[in-house]
Length: 323
Image 1: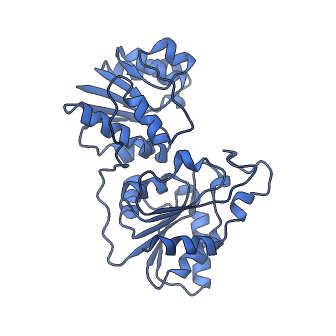
Image 2 (image 1 turned 180 degrees about the vertical axis):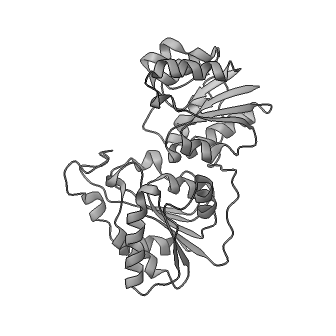
Image 3 (image 1 turned 90 degrees about the vertical axis):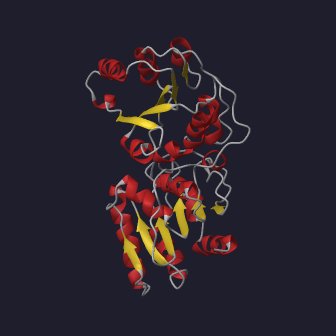
């Protein structure tokens, strides 16, 4: 059975779609998946054993996106079923243009007009649950939703390793501060080697943490910010013994590997995007009148949802994990 899956664009969202993909895999044992998505989502999920094709959707770069979408659909061809975790008109058109009859996605004016199964999904629940409901719109949903799943083998480190992830691709409002990450890392440097993570646009932030660790006479660290592929990022996070992070894609990678995690949340909806079924995880956040604002940058200019979170609170949360 050929199933087309349109993945979410963000790495973290793609990870939160994996329980829905596993539900499809269990419901249709003979399924063969074709994944279409962003570079990050494809690079993370293309190792699924039932994935026979994975394509990066670059139609947004075209001067005529409608025509590019049509051409991509004709390249893909028809499927027995299609599921989209993205809800936009060009995605609905893509599914329609493939000629696939059974297509599931979230209800929207364009999807209701163009596609066969468009359930209304309550957005107040965890995004994992929302994605499962989309995927199972044409089938019986599982009685239990699985944890997040990656088919990339974790790296094996010689010593227990603490991962530090100060970045968050979505925007600065989700980012805690380098000096506080460094203070937390230094507090556990006697027990863990330290691995500093970061994407290509977060190298400066990671270098800031490195300089602060050096100033604190911490030497057992490695800075790999901007130096890893998506696959290598997952391998390294999967090998960590402890992970301290903002609400970000890497946080969900850690959850997929059940890495003990402390996550700092500020302007985002933690009940909808927290570490799904990570048995050893803690959230550090403060309830604010202005949060969750869901803005990329603090609209009030004070960033109090993050400035009020202290390094000592995060250190205490790590201790409570009992790692």
